[in-house]
Length: 94
Image (tube, rainbow, N blue to C red; front, side, top):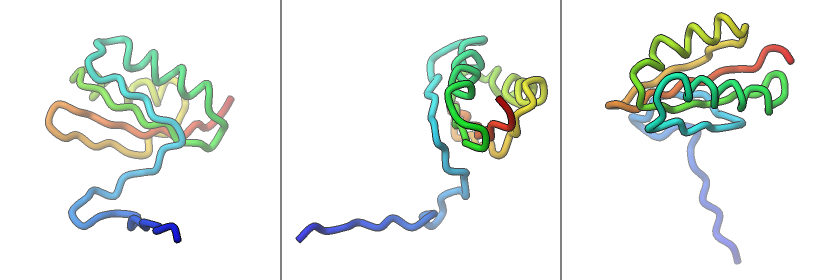
């Protein structure tokens, strides 16, 4: 018999963060590479799907919202913990 582990949608004390269809780990990369990697990932997913990007470059804090506005995709979440900054974007168009 196979045991199934069911994880709650959110663990106690864990922030309520969006679920991503694609994840980009841009940790250690400097500007402009986190945004370049994000743009590549957005192009690869379907309209309506969510891309998560995590970066350690503090420039992402200004660059990610600016990119979402310019590229016309929806910024649906942001979470920072220490020097790791994560953003979630919903693809709105082709």
